[in-house]
Length: 338
Image (cartoon, rainbow, N blue to C red; front, side):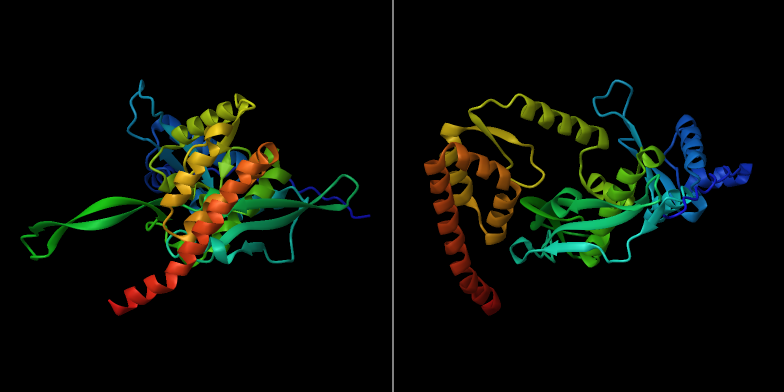
């Protein structure tokens, strides 16, 4: 039997006045005085050092007024090394010797939103129980839940030029297509690595909930940073979707038309028409496959409740997919000719 050795908690670090001022100006620059006091106390509690970049603070909707619907929200961000350090100090943690399990599918690949076609990442950490046995704890992170996606845009010439350079002035027009946040290029260059960090943070928080509640890895918050909605709005939106699910009647199916959209309750009688209209306007195989993937369980539920109508949707989807795939070589040839 393994011997359990629990490490003593790290003594809270004290800071000089100059060090506190520097932390406030760098790692908690948007905090009010009261928020900064909270941040420092939380950092001491977890034994994390901002100077080692183990912890910093994000303020969402920082210009909100007291009566605004969009509330000012403070979130504590911890690097993955900080998570590991907290777990290691308990004496009950060891990392997995295997690399993260990253699942990819060619049909999920999209050069703008998912270059490698990643579906999910699974990371295992190990925790020792009271008997001294090591138990695996898995964390799972899905690409469509954590990747920082924003709406893409096309540039339109305004017919004007800049005085200093003579270059044309361009206007950005949203095109409805999702793309990885250009301000966070790590997700494009190291997608597997970034998603694995999210999965590891999930595993560590599951294994040590009392030690890590209320702190988040920066990779976990990338999607909130990319989303125009504030963190508080995202919580409100999640609550609305939860209530919608809770009040779902027996005559509806929950459908998400596009990644990032809220769920919609579609009546059984409208399912074929609504899905047919969506399928018809899809412009690429990837768009169709993504829609089918995120609604996999809903479509299975519809099949169980209305088999003939579900088969009609399946037929429409496969015909549209076949047509789009047949058009792709011609489109590519035309683009190459240009």
